Structure formats: structure tokens, C-alpha cells
Length: 143
Image 1 (cartoon, rainbow, N blue to C red):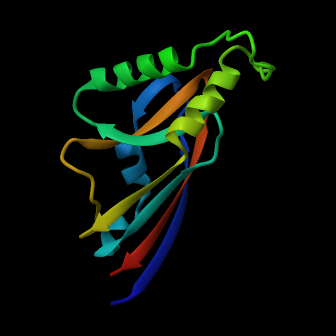
Image 2 (cartoon, rainbow, N blue to C red):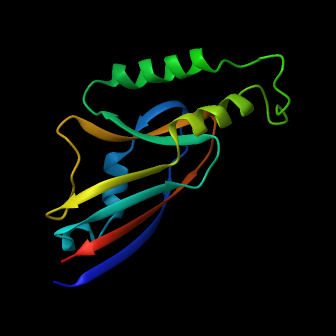
């Protein structure tokens, strides 16, 4: 067995506010994933106003319901927010990012991310217009 390390920086296309399934976009960038028999993939989003999570990959209403609930939990225009320099969605985006987090760890098994049958990787964009998001994926394992 050989120990392997790979790291990728992925520029995710700009998306509007919402929860977006990015599994295929991530997998397309991981050109060496098939070499790993067993390992770990660490996904790290380099931003403070978006987040990562794993959830339902088949029914898009899960993504829209997640976004609706997050917006209900942390609405815009809360009068005591001071950090509003970039608009009313700015501070709520930071709070939502901290709630869900910017880091995921996914097992690698037989050259594939070992996600469950109905699981997919979400980018949760918490800004109205977040722009391009950068994701660093580090793979570690054995061939």
C-alpha cells in the first residue's frame, strides 16, 4: 500500500442565495480520487458568508426548505446588527455560515466518496450574490 496525498483548489461557479447541490462539480475536479482505496476527503470552504453541509440529493424541495428555514432563523434587517456594511444580507450570512460550518470530512472507499445513497454535498450560499466561492479539498489515504 502506498500513502497518497492530493489537494485541489476548486472555484465553484457563482450562485444566488440558496442551498445548491455541488457533488458533481466537486467530483469532476478530483481527478486522482480513483487511486484511493481507503481514505478521507476534507472539504474546506474559504469564505465566511457561505457554508457546506451534506443532505438529501434527490428532492430539490429539501434544498429550498433548508434555505427558507435558515432565512426564518436569521432574517435580514434585525435592528441590533451592526455589521451591515455590505448590505442587509451580510451579518445574517455570517451567522448562517457559523451555524452550518465551512468544513466537511467524507470517507473515501474504493475510489469514491462514501456518501449514502441519498446524500449530496451542498454549498449553502447565504448572500444574495456571493460570487465565485473557493473550496480546498484535501485527500489522504492509501492506494
